[in-house]
Length: 327
Ligand code: TXA
Ligand code: MG
Image 1 (tube, rainbow, N blue to C red):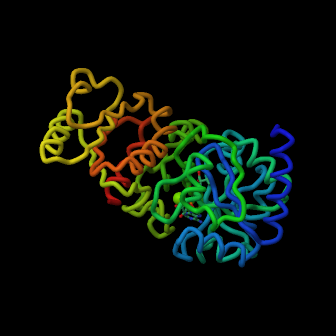
Image 2 (cartoon, rainbow, N blue to C red):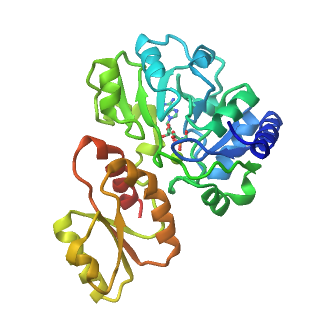
Image 3 (cartoon, protein in one colour):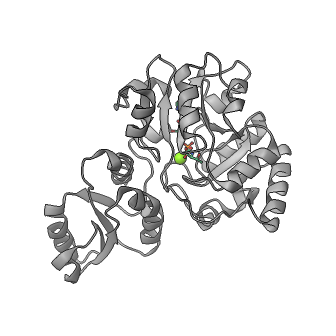
């Protein structure tokens, strides 16, 4: 339960949403830039603040699964099962939309993305507001998502009506997006909820390719996305340090994001070693904040060690790949 000061702030934020304003708020994954999902003018403000193309759909955040029928129709059993198992939590469901859902939310598609966030401030805001809150991540289009209120202030500052500070996000990467509109579940974006958990709940394998989601337009599925401003290279452990020494010898200011203990390499001079957690969840939690910090530190190049090709690392590997392609 948020404290009294926060409760006042949440109350004002709900008022602002009702008046068509924008509110940045914390979720367990990343900070969102929220607006009334039923107000086209408010939604336009979100697109303007982000510099995001208007045909990209937004996720509608709802207080609990009981609100699903207000936004979606032909809701399959699988959706109810996943909602019961994982909401509130880092899972977004793509369902067939109800006719009255605005085109500004769906990008003109016949589907809608829905999720119940697991953060006390987000939950209290949704309760106080009453309706659905459309919210993309609170960053400029294509950049790294914010995991702290300060990130939102730095990047969007004056363009946001209000920022609710709920501390650092627990998960640190965006929600897992699963489409249920074509009968079987399809993964559109790996994220905070492991695919294995979803497969367990559905007793069914999920198609891992994003090809099936191409027609559904997921901007997170664009190659250049989630990118830092400093060029990032991804390498396996065996070439990582050699590459770092090579760049350092050319006079470049290099930071190396190595997994866990770097052993004798950490002592090498000429570049900065940034030890990253060797547990996937912990790595995900600090990834975006680390990229932002290194962006501000004036490095010429970031080199990251590619984490192992195993399920728990799916989301982190995905975001690192996109960050590397975006620069
Ligand atoms: O964790 C999250 O999902 C965060 C927090 C704030 O909830 N939100 C987030 O929003 O990452 P955004 O807009 O940055 O990314 C949402 C993704 C986009 O890739 C969008 O295309 C996809 O969800 N999406 C939304 N509605 C969709 C739909 N109807 N069909 C396919 N993809 C959809
Ligand atoms: Mg985003």
